[in-house]
Length: 216
Image (cartoon, rainbow, N blue to C red; front, side, top):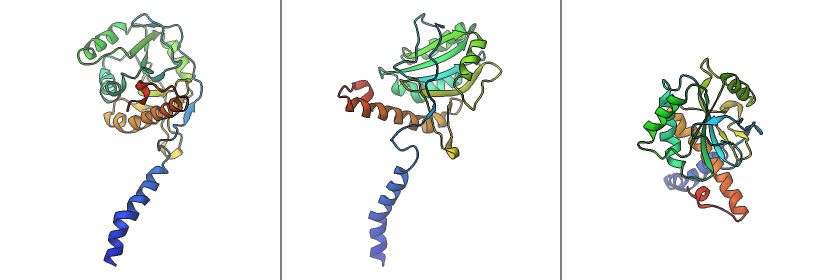
């Protein structure tokens, strides 16, 4: 009897555990689309005066709001938990949509990050609060912008401009709260890896994989 128990623990239980976790909605297969084909950004001026587009890039998209200096810790959390680990990927960008008038605040935050981070994949575009609200409404999300035209959430957008997340009713997630480092380290990191695995598989299938996306 004891021998059977030992055999069960050593061989059967690990297989059952593997099958259980492999059947989860967010196993490394495909991350669902929450909103298909979101609009590209307008001709809004960026901090570095260059055109910023969501096309053909995996984008982490956010909305800083006018209170960005007070909430700068959110950007530092995202920078530490996600950006620093993956910013060397050629096909990845971090884009924040910001209200006009916050340019100096953003620049001061970037100057602080630049002391210990290569900030070349951070992009900030500026437009009116009205334009931001109109654009955000076209994302068709359950969450809303706050009174400062911002949100602590950031969103994963694929190369085809599909906003991706979790659609299961018990685990619905359209964005990831940058105020909570644990959410970035767990839910967001898990989902972001799925996107990378998707593109890794597609690139390998097309025989033109790049080191940037194949790198783990």
